[in-house]
Image (cartoon, rainbow, N blue to C red; front, top):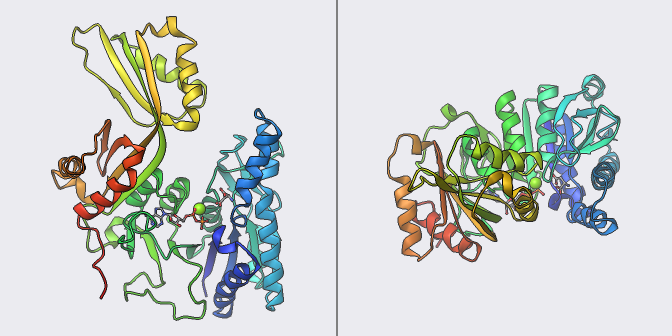
Length: 423
Ligand code: ADP
Ligand code: ASP
Ligand code: MG
């Protein structure tokens, strides 16, 4: 007997029919004698609607009330899932974040889970009850409802799995695993039977929204066995990987690097749109300038991504370029321009609408030339590179958004990741 955490995303719970289908996956595990905790997202589209209402109610809405509103979608799906399970003859009850409770920091809209009270869940699970828990939310030390950031139910699921010491955390979604790139962009993307935590972490943080970045971080830190699989599969089909591979269940196993036999040099290509670029020209080239610029942005809670600083010609002045999400562009510009005397720059320019394309693979540690071939592949398509950043296992470039999909497909083909055409 195992303890399994099963998480269902919004598309998998889009209507009652889909909730019933998801519940049949739960029933299969219960019938096999496993203890099951279920984490649910809001029904597809619900969270977007709730966010929109907050924005329409007031552009400068109270972040605590935003959380009170946007957390409600998960409560509906948890209750409905429990009702449907009961209807199938399974003992089940729903829990909201505060009922568990899932304790978090008090950063509303981007709270981090600090602890999960698991005694009650444990005793219910051991009695055979299915605990259906709302994802995406918790409660702060000030007794306010918090949310974990968009896509946060993945993190809830991993955190619950870690707290319960679950044997597996299955993330059920609308694709049947993690692919070499978003299969909606490159139809010839291939499903990976396994991916290392490190690569998955890079892929998630660089735009593959199939798992929230924090969930991968947490699974890696806590050693949670994480599987990404399809909720649309036949719940009664045999529980083996379609290609006969090894993870034990259908889908992609996210695991330690040493559990992967065949490593590719490049495992995946990701795309993140809506990246704005800002260049500050002729700032003083002396210690403390970068600290001041990025300190001003940090004070505004603006997350900066790519950063490039040029070597100055005369040793006195330099240019700094960085990217922020489009949504933060105006605030970032304001943070710098409102304190112009302090930074002593000449001009500041910027534009929204960039796309960051990244190639990722642990094999890049030991193989030279991956970045060079990336630039070659893009130049062959006439795509201009605006910025470049690298780390040990990834290379990212910023390009114009209009070429984003073309670039992803070109790189996917270039690195030999395309699936063979059938027939
Ligand atoms: P859920 O509602 O189940 O949380 P999401 O929409 O958050 O689902 O994530 C699933 C989506 O992630 C897929 O529909 C797919 O388009 C997208 N995606 C992006 N990159 C990848 C990738 N490398 N592998 C699989 N899916 C990806
Ligand atoms: N419902 C939340 C969102 O749409 C959380 C999630 O789906 O993971 O972001
Ligand atoms: Mg998601």
